[in-house]
Amino acid sequence: MLTIDLKRENLATVIPMVFEQPTCRSLFDKTPEETFKRGQTIFWERNHADKYIYLVTNGMVKLSSSHQNREMLEDYFQKGELLNCPAVLGGAPQEMTATAMVPQTSIKKIPIPLFRQALRSNSSLYEEVMSNLSASLQRTQDRLHRLTLLSAQQRVYDFLAKHAVQSGRKVGFEYVIKPVLTHQEIGYIAGVGRQTVTTVLNELRREGVIHFTRRYLLVRNLTMLQDLARSTSEARQ
DNA sequence: ACATTAACACCAC
DNA sequence: GTGGTGTTAATGT
Image (cartoon, rainbow, N blue to C red):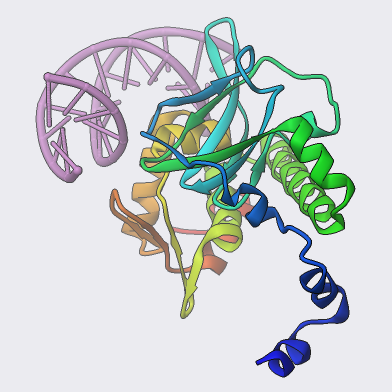
């Protein structure tokens, strides 16, 4: 058993096992899991955003800010991702609300000081934080790219394509996206209206590029989706 | 032209 | 019944 592990793992991952260094998972293992319904508020900034770091253990969470009664989605997090990483590094907190985007969304939280302490003696945890921050930056850059260069329809195509590759389960040549977001949430992410998302999605379904129900979304033809996101509007009849 | 908002019917959980 | 979806008309840029 051990010999198999040694073959598969490189030295850097074996050594921490020997010294029983806590992984990110085990750090959260002892803390209770909290579950939320879609739309439920997980926290708002003035409460405990500056006190805890969160691990998304199921579903999806969005971070949003409010401006003149308008909601702006700042970022979103999926299962396995760390939320509130900037707070660990001492970044100035913003006025934001965390909300469950899909049913059965659950999180675990641990106090920031405790997390900082663990961070000091655990380099793999540090890498975990870095990769989460990097992923967050990538999502934001993708959104900026869409808003700057793409039409409303293309923004939906582009988000779907990137989301399928990033978060979908590949089955043959197709990608299963689960859990499924509401059209409203896709609209917030892609920067388009709710009705636009509905019509674009239905158009794609009619053309057989995707298929979806309220439970899952299937990308049947990723390359077509990527092409649509690139081509200037009229590549179809 | 293109896109969002409003309005309303319909459908699923 | 509520929240989400599908469709069309009005409105804005």
